[in-house]
Length: 149
Image: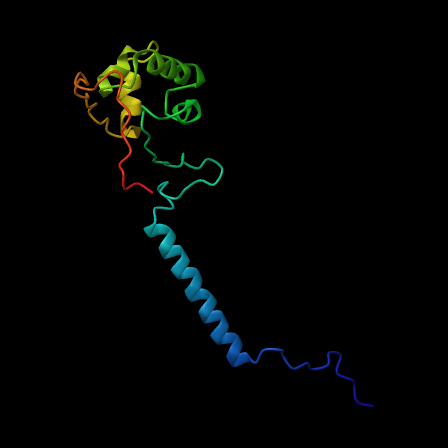
């Protein structure tokens, strides 16, 4: 009596020729990924650590003469108290004529001004209006013309 084959032969799901092609493609992808990682500085610290990402760079500018407390508090080195001091100074003395005028606010020094200066829009020169001495104090009413409807 012939012995039965202990393991039946099963045809592979993927033919041998296709397995070789797939293995070569996977190897090529792995080599390409390794080359990219080396080129990107993966072994020298050039890649971003996902647990400690760098601070995002958010650039915005504001008009120091029109900004409110919320906007001013967003500036680096300024908190709500200093922002309120800027508003109080602006209300008491009017708009700032230059960046150096911001130094008059209590709590703002040269170092703070240097930190916030890149975020400030240029201050326009204040235009003074000519005196209005020629206007009458009690204007006369304009008479209606005869052709008026």
